[in-house]
Image (cartoon, rainbow over all chains, first blue to last red):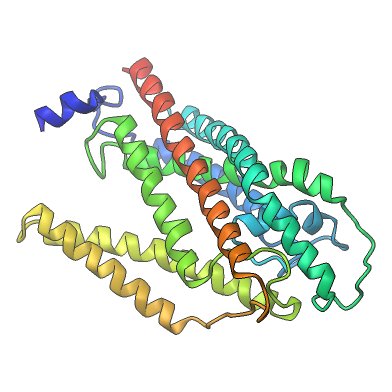
Length: 75
Length: 237
């Protein structure tokens, strides 16, 4: 353990003296972050593909190459 | 602390997406162009061969690609940071940079490699328009299956670690993950829509470039976020 710690030179740093970030501090940020991420991912992966909020194909065509690259079904 | 980590995760994701975009521009775009040329030559994929171009190829290859990967990077970077904030010191008491790098490698395997074995990335001209709903649902199901199986495997390891050595408990947990994913993949619908005369070399090159850019994306997030998280933790000490 000591040998690998010296090799990696990356010791555990306590969180303000505690072992981990308290859950009640984490939760509101988690809700906010996951919501934003879901909206972003929806537009990259699904909008005007399997499902559409807006008419037309502009969003689909705009993110077209990225959608193929990330493995999301495109058309 | 969590807020700071979240913003840094999203920023790391955006920078990682920038690098992935450059990689994809160099290695994936030539394959996409070839696939579109194949599609145009056959003109069987879309009903009308000469559709009006809504977005020019130049925009798709440039700003469109960057925007798509940027949104993806910011999203996964944010979720990565939140997972880090939860797991750091909880799942393992190891250094922040090591933890971030291990997490990034794990995310690449769970989210990209394993779902891609069942449903590989496909260039344009592969895939029928009518089945896009089914294919999207099946792909998301495969990603969810992989992530859930990994969470179950983690629980399994924790439950076994009292009666077995940690290493053996880990091996059993990995075996459990593989078994659950293999069973689920067997049950999910098979999708094979590659045209019979689609060039095999083109398909391989595209998939390799896709894997390469996503590996670059995840490794950049792991390295960059690890640095920033270590600095954040040092400050808060």
